[in-house]
Image (tube, rainbow, N blue to C red):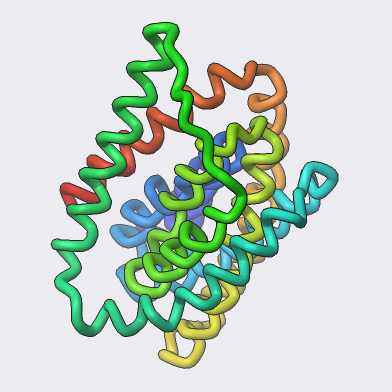
Length: 245
């Protein structure tokens, strides 16, 4: 593969991952990381996606900051930061397959049940109190520190809080941004960063902006009920991917 074709393939993987995240608020790693790993190798793909994740969160926050609810986002962020060191410890002592398969099964149950209820015209009457941001954020930090899968607890919390689509997307990005800084610093200390990492990230910035604009337009064109169904469907896909990991 030539350098030009490799750059095009990398850009396409990042664009579609960013489009998913800008539309439903999460899931970019589900799309981009398997493709980038095949193209660049695990270490280089991990380093590039760490930088891209940070930039993606900045773009989405810049576009939707008016819908940011600091009352809830700061609780999730603080709890996630506290959970990251625990996640690093879990990484050393807990079997990865046990944790990820258990998480995948829970996502399948929650996403599948929510999608079935929404399509049958029924509603989930369970509503999360705001204090639940602390344990859900903490669990998110643990999963992010251990396996870079910090999104699922945040998504479950957001659906239980019944956030409208724009608030859902923006609030999640605050936690993703905080986590991505810690992850990027870890990659740098491990020697994953190279000059090509930043060159590829800079060239992909216009794609991130384009994907964010398209995703934002898609979100504004769908009602809250349809958006929640998309989120449930994405959770099902994520659950399957974790079970197959």
